[in-house]
Length: 429
Image (cartoon, rainbow, N blue to C red; front, side):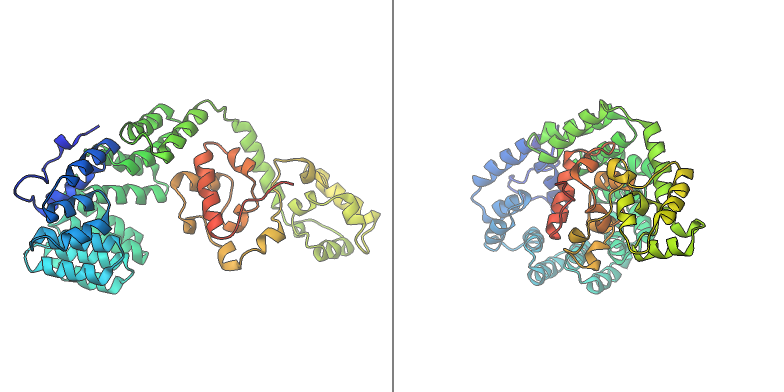
């Protein structure tokens, strides 16, 4: 765990450090709860409005920071800090003005690149692109320039181009934290675990260690059943941030997963069963009467038949004993039977129409990628074959928690996302 003594600069000396050094100081201040408390206490003793304002910005208190910074003496550091504070408050126009004032006091790309980030976060991608075009002289020179280009491409959906820019940034500066994280996360999203782990490892070796990088690396290690490494990553976070709720829950999940017995044979059996459930009725040679009856009953797959009892079929108009025996014989060939899903909890349950009716198709058809879930939660849902919100709300809490490496942290995350959409997981009466 690093301390403030390890930081490259001291904000509270007579001469203000450069803004680049001030930005690097932010990571040291927030690298642990103890550092932040110590730094905040020192900031409170400052009489100079500018110094105290910058200190409060580093403590993530932008509202108070702006009040003090506006009183501070005019200089490059003031305008840059003011722009960053206003951006945190969502005051885009004022932030841009502050960065414009800073640009007049510096020949470098620093203020322009902060403007790029401000425009991008505000959703004005055209203005961001225009600002970046004006920084073209810093191509293959500035890691931050290539990082900002990469983020713009990410926002535009050009993911390969974005990764190329992040790689260029890392080549120019092996310690560029934001580029390392962006590159690792991009590989992570694409399922390239080896490359993702490589860049997360590079990231967490840059002092002070990146908290989200450690947690994401822990997810990868756990997925590879490297529980000791996963636990080490999480405990490294807790050493600096003992009250980090997500890391605390994650620690419990890893300890539980490390003791879990994984039944590979059961999973293979489940996969074979799922394939049988998806077989369409049209694949079987049925009489016209049986086929028409099943069509009218909205029974289109073997899975639908397994969720229907004999009595339900016989109660349908024109469906007789002959059709029943015909269907039973076909199911016997697949070693399944009518009504089986009503007894067997391992067979997927159909989506409740009442639950599904709580939202429109634009929400129900959202993919898990669009839900903004953590890598850990998405992977668990992928193992369950859950691709959309509609499929997710057909699951119960017990079904999710029964998945390998799926813990309470991921469950709570998913429940919160669904609640924000006015939905919930299926409840058993």
